[in-house]
Image 1 (cartoon, rainbow, N blue to C red):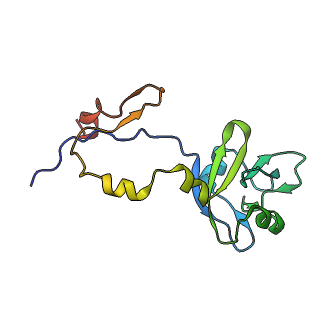
Image 2: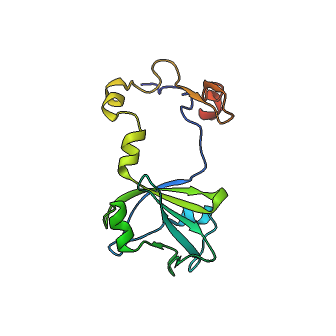
Amino acid sequence: MPGPGALPVLRAPQSRRHAIRTFDEKGRIGDRLLFGVLEWHSRMPVSIRVHAGGALVVCRDPRGGSALTERTMVAVPAPILRWCGFARREQVLLVAVPSLSALVIHGQETLDRLLPDPERMVTEARPAGEGSPVSRTLPSGTPGVVGADRGAEVAGG
């Protein structure tokens, strides 16, 4: 049975600025790749703030009241975790903000609010290569069909 042929690219690659991680039993969290993007290092001074929406905001801050651990993790004090409604061993969304040398920590409910309804996505899914390519916004900000002109590239041609 022949393969599907050249398939259009349905999404444009993005630089990695997000990660799903879990607070450990001591309220610590980290991600080597994201912290590398932020150019954060062990024992670097940081401030830990709370956003009105319940997210945590960690910023590089020479006068910060906290510091990254020896293993380059953020150690969030238990009272702050409780105040924001985060539990130990809870999975959260980490978002790096390199321009501000900051990390925003969101609860899973943020993803539930922002992502499309997964049940609708399942019922609307179609076999790969069937139908027209997905219309998306290109990295330049102009709408278009992502990958429509890259079919040969994807197929190795």
